[in-house]
Length: 147
Image 1 (cartoon, rainbow, N blue to C red):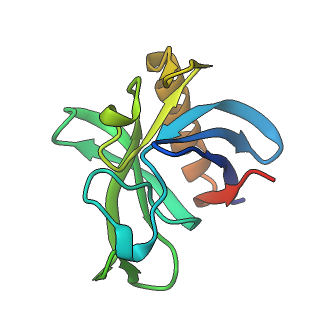
Image 2: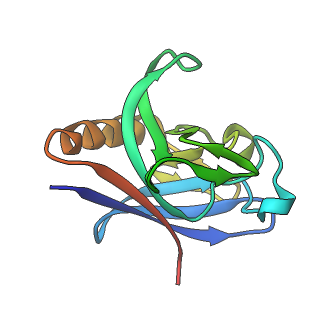
């Protein structure tokens, strides 16, 4: 059975807060870079586009551990900031403000005025969730606006 996670975003002028859900069950707070249009893209300073993505676990050479990888699910490759690619190459990881994001989704327990905190246990919980769900089906992340 497939697992559907939902990231409900709140866009702000310099950053993007959000809440992550497993179906309707709240999991944690998120923080990303600013949402920008295709024409305004800034490498490592732009949130990934709204949409549906597959999540998997892979080894990160940068962080030297197993982490969640966000990949494309739209039947092959997608256009991402002008390039046709199969993998976005972005992850879900810890960090405290949008400067730590580098285009990835930061996950933490607590939202602050400037970002998020208490990330380590939340990120381990998410890795465990994706690993477990991946045993019985695929895991998807749906990035949507918070209405």
